[in-house]
Length: 148
Image (cartoon, rainbow, N blue to C red; front, side, top):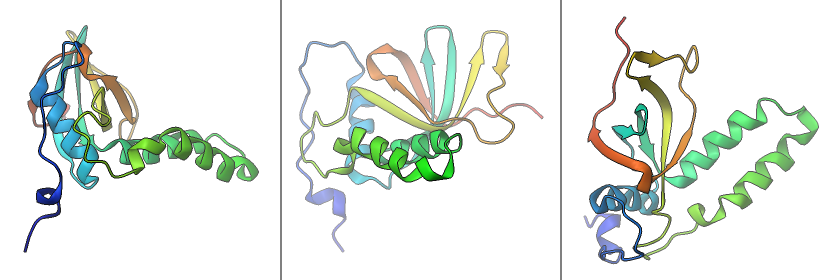
């Protein structure tokens, strides 16, 4: 059985003169193109670490929207969902373009660490997080967990 991702156009080098890790960029492109791809990842950024599940832009916008909708009155929930789905619309459209949505990385259940330790972000799951790939100085696969 042929995998869906093998039907997509091959990844090409992206040359937009912005300094970012090409391997990380292609990992994010793969997540955005396949939609159901998730992988635990830890990112090194200025000031600390962010660890969570790398997801597609569409999964991010779904989760982000639901975080926002929690604070909206019942009569405004549908309009709010529609607004944010339209805002993130390009992430819901299939694309073979190698440059499609690769400037930003999206994490769910994000947890944050500073040099002094974990920064509390919530009692349960961490928030949906979005960041510029060009601002990430390093990464590793796998997710950090707080010591119990």
